[in-house]
Length: 426
Ligand SMILES: *Cc1c(COP(=O)(O)O)cnc(C)c1O
Image (tube, rainbow, N blue to C red; front, side, top):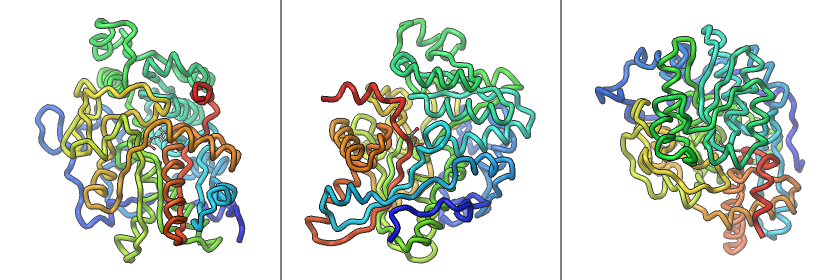
């Protein structure tokens, strides 16, 4: 059998997959932040581009990928589907392990998938600037790149702890024409509140979101863009799972277990949802594992309830597993997993026991990353390494049980710009 599925264009889908069309029951709807009543789509127009809102509320099972976006995808998609045969051999496991490698995108992670769609939709609506937040910088970089392709400026509020720790990502954003501000900043009311307490405030994703939403609400030509959590972002990421299905079929690999790391839930959902459809519709028994950091355990220790997406309370209320909007997670290296909430659709599947969740400590994650580098030769992003740690545990369990298992996981990004995080480990 091949170790590597083809990257032939036939694996590139022409439509995204919308899980909501196949759910027997939808999750509770978002609520208006002030009235706490179910949101009208028009309430969102102050924040998001109109064509983005149309996708957010759609219940169509498939949504076309525009020609211009397909062209942009074709530069790096389909991404490779690779067998981790060196890792399998090292672990002496009967498990077969394949991974989808999203690190080949121009900005190094899966976030480019939704960034390109969002920048395209904004350009169609005549939006000149998209405001957004970024933690470790992957999302801000992806949106700056996508904006440069479609003529939309990215204004990025970057969490201060990352801004100072990861100058590489700030430089990338600026090279792509993005405008980067350290958050909390004194330039917005939301930021000023924290900045006045402490000009060195380390910041959080929740605070940076408040700043980005505030400038969108106050400026009609600026709209807000979010890199995870929302149904539409998960819809765009379904391209990962759709390609994987086509590639798995080509090489005759049928996954029993699908694993991804979760921050807001988008890369995990992107790989999983097209397969979850078969659990819902075709009685497939595929298992799903969502892996989060021990210090930011929204799925394994959070509460399923309505909460704000940001710290100040400007966004709609989402029904999700959350640690509370004021939760400020410790500054771990996997900055992309430091978010207090979880995508409502992923939360819903966890509640229904279709998806299981586990939390991993940072030291175990870094050991997994190093083993992956030594066997497979790819340096994973610290976020993606959470998935690898779980894959290793599952492969070793298969060995103890003497039972083969087919594992598919998402390698959501490479770790080249997180290299200093690896230096600090012994
Ligand atoms: C942002 C990011 C994540 C976490 O976000 P999700 O929405 O949960 O996918 C994971 N991996 C990488 C490489 C990221 O950049």
